[in-house]
Every structure is written in C-alpha cells, then in structure tokens.
Length: 237
Image 1 (cartoon, rainbow, N blue to C red):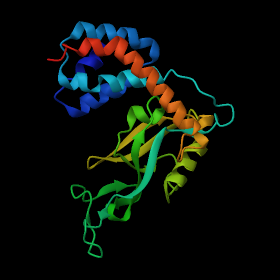
Image 2: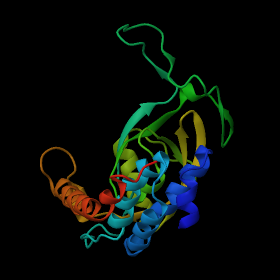
Image 3: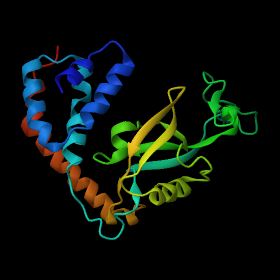
C-alpha cells in the first residue's frame, strides 16, 4: 500500500494511473491502514490529494452488499454507456459539411485482422461510472470501449446491445476490453460483478438504482468527512 501511495506522486502518468488502480482494488477493511498512511505522509502532494477521495470511495463501496437474488448471475460493469463514432464528427454549427476527425492524433490502430481505420469504428463511451462497482476502478469517464477480446464477433449497435453483452458474459467473468483513451488504444482487464436487482429500472425518475446510489454516496461522504477530510485541511504541500 505504501509503495502504491508513493507512486501517486510519480512523474510518470502511467505509473500514477497504475498505482491508483491498485489502491482502488483494496477493500473496506484496508481503510484504517490507508488513513494511518495518509496521516504519516502529510503534507500530501497535490497528485496524491486529488485522487484520495475517489480511492476511499471505491475501497469503501466495493465492500457494500445489495440484492442480487434475481439477476446476480448476470455480469455488471456499473457504467452509464452511450454509443459514439470514434473516427469522425460533424463541425459545430455547420450542418451538411464534411465530417472532421474527432481523434486526429490516432491515424490507425491494429485490430484483429490488421489495421483498422478509426473512421469506420463505433464504440461505447463511458459517460459516467458508479462508484464501488467493477467499471469504476479500471475505466475512466470518456473512455471509448471498442470491443471485448473474449467476444471478438460481438458488434455494439448501441448502449442496449453493449449492456446485454455484459449481462451475458456473467458475474465473476474476467473480461478484456479494448479501450480508446486519450488517443491511445489500450487493453484493460475487469472482473465483472453481479448485477444488482435494482439495476432493472435505471432510466428516468427516482428508481430503485438511483436510490441505491444515493444511499451509498451518503454513506461514503459521511466516512470521508469524519476520517479523511480533516487530514487534508492543512496537509497538502
């Protein structure tokens, strides 16, 4: 834990990201040790302080329980997906004109059958992540999921198709996603969690999933304010 926490201040962005993912993989029982470490390492560097609440949130909520009697065998990422075209977009306020590159720094990237032109590829954008669930640890808002290595023939025709594919993979399944992140295509590994029964009605209104998320957010905010926020009041260098 101490090594990962120190690496949050690394000059290497990839090392910082890896350390954050590792710390977010710890559980609720590790929070007292993390609090002691934060107290010992004050003043924190800004790169450590800025991600601390997200780490604490994931550690705490990953140990939460919820009803899975009906849907618990189905896979669940815990993200809000939206379909996007990763190669092109229409110029703002100029309808009818030729599309322009949305990711000009990516000319091409390797695919299963050679080189793929990104203008021909659609993906699923991570619009938001639900803290405590599998996707929140490894994925980032703005990531574009291009495919699933274990299911190369699956094509996502929309967010609904993507969600159905995740359900079908099953809880506990280790899945490798090809992800477009900041102009680079990377492969990330995620172990899918069980689908909460409350996730059946996630669109519009105060549905059961929204209530579950709000309850979890309040719990972790109370924890943060009581145990970690006081350590940062004068503890950032």
